[in-house]
Length: 515
Ligand SMILES: *[C@@H]1O[C@H](CO)[C@@H](O)[C@H](O)[C@H]1NC(C)=O
Ligand SMILES: *[C@@H]1O[C@H](CO)[C@@H](O)[C@H](O)[C@H]1NC(C)=O
Ligand SMILES: *[C@@H]1O[C@H](CO)[C@@H](O)[C@H](O)[C@H]1NC(C)=O
Ligand SMILES: *[C@@H]1O[C@H](CO)[C@@H](O)[C@H](O)[C@H]1NC(C)=O
Image (tube, rainbow, N blue to C red; front, side, top):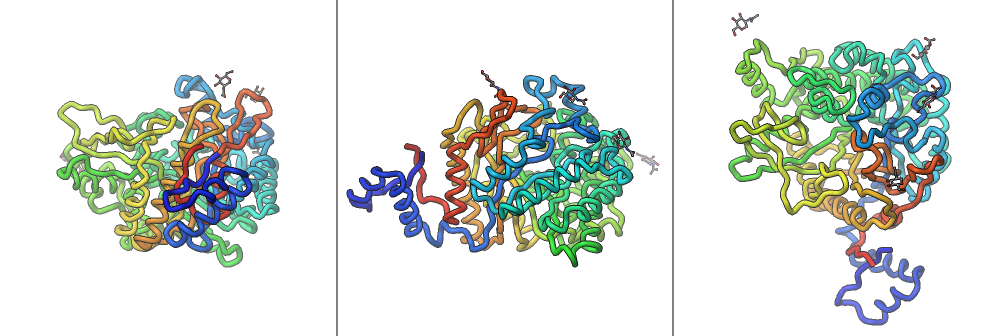
């Protein structure tokens, strides 16, 4: 139970009253926040709130009906040691069967939208357009129609990491033809669900796939290729996204009236010392920039500083041409401007400094960069949740948005993920409440103080799910899922009630304390 702290200014009777009855205290809380927080703590009219999940992380049913195998199915089954406790997403939260419960939860919280992803191999079992699954289509139709019946908007991601294994067998994201396979899939998806879906995200966190999956091998598809993999994947994901966007523009926009964008994962980077400022800027261009400049800048193409840097670095390494593949003029044009808003996931911040001689930088983009010869470190004062990677630094949210506006202009921004993890059985989660409040406060400062056009916020995640290599031990959900129970019972956490209040009142509390 959380409540508004009644400060010095308030006299006795009111503070006593707030403790007497829950109903009354809720009412008073609402009144107090309305009086104290109006203007500075209120979201603009029409601001939308939602929560997210992703297909492989919640659906389970990995082998039902004619569903094809995904790279995550293959990865967890062939590398159980890569996942904590050898867990996998075979059953997960079983949302394939429990989808109505997920909708009911979203409705109970009062979400304006639910962000989920489609499983490409569930819809197209062989990965290609010649083979469409009726059961896959029916599943997503039920989910979409069920959400709409409750007045919840579906926000749909086409690719949240579960690539058909058949396409991986042809090189996955290093194969340039993947852009055409993805375009076929996107065309099918827009055609099948676009009469009811208005907000689309093509690809989720390209950087997590390319700059981690293809060089560290620690996630699916488990490829350790630190020379070209990352950069080929980077380029082809941008082209795949752009092709999908252009298809929507050409064939669907005039009748479906939706919006399409790309969801980046943005790590905010600050210099460890003032001497590291240039390095921090290069670090931002090497992460956010490589996945944004081609789409959102006026000129398109790679960030100029990174293009130059990679050219020089590659030559020093003995390559004749840059490891960062060039774009043709046509490709630059195709990708540039392929957005309707800027979508981003933001969780955490790092400090950057040059590596010491012989120091292992690890892999970009959470530990360091061998190319930049830089190491990412944390500030000891930053706490983390159960996921130790996710250091909490709320100010990073506002600074990240300010950097994007400086680089790409005054775009409409949509926070498509932000969240906090706990571990163990824990329904009372003041840390998560504080996290949501502190990050939302920075969103509000961006809006009211800086003038940023942020139009929505998505909490990750609606329910506890399979957190990739962390398995089930790291829990981000507003609702707990009992993974020891075959029916995967969902139970509300305190944070779900808090988030629900934020949505209902359209403001964050003045001061939230645990009682
Ligand atoms: C599906 O996978 C499960 C393991 O998660 C296995 O027990 C079951 O036999 C499989 N079903 C089919 C039809 O292959
Ligand atoms: C569709 O793909 C699935 C999975 O790869 C396969 O079992 C099935 O035979 C394919 N059907 C057609 C018509 O190609
Ligand atoms: C590649 O670079 C080497 C020198 O490093 C040079 O001798 C060679 O001609 C170059 N090859 C091409 C195709 O440019
Ligand atoms: C299942 O229950 C045990 C204790 O009985 C607990 O240690 C474990 O974390 C639970 N597993 C999950 C996935 O919740």
